[in-house]
Image: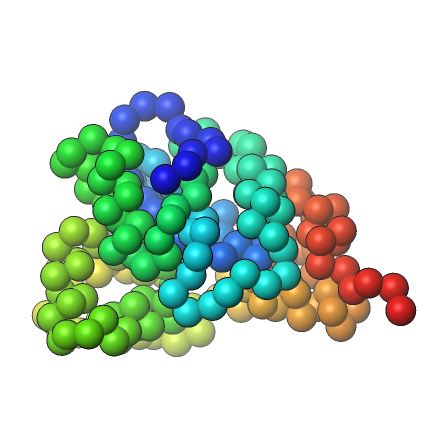
Length: 203
C-alpha cells in the first residue's frame, strides 16, 4: 500500500472507499462525508489492478492527481494505492498499514454490495469468512437491496442525503462524450482536470 495522503491521528474505526474513480464524483465525497459520522478516517483506496475491469480512460497517475485535488479540504481523508482489487486483499493491506485492532468498514452503494456478496469466490462460505475481517457500510442507490439475514450483523445501512443515487463516473463520461452538462457531477476542484482528461479528441 502506497500512501499519497494520510490523515493525522490513529483511527480506531477506518472507513475504506475503494474504486476506480474514473473520475471521482460528488457522490464519492458524499459517501465519505456520510461515513465520517460512523468512522474516524476514510481511506480512498485506488487499486493498481481490478478483479473485473481494466484501466481505461484516465491513467492511474491522472486518477491519483484528481483524487489529491478532490480531497484537499478533507482532513480526515487519506489516499493510497493498493496492490489488490478485491475487498479482502485491500483489507489485508490495511492490516499492515494500520494498528492491530483497527475496525475496517468498506463503504459502497447497494449495487456494489450486492455484487460483492454474490461474487463467486470459489466456495460458498467465502463472503461470510471475509466479513469476519471487515464490515460494510452500504448506501442506497437505485434500488433497496437487502443483505442475506445471515450477514446482516456485518452489513450496515449508510443513509445518504442529497439525491446522489444517479451520480456516477459512467454518467460523467457519457455526458462529456455526448456534449451534455456534467460539471455539477464532479467536485469543482477537479472540473478542469476532468475536462482535459475526458474530452473527446478533436476530429
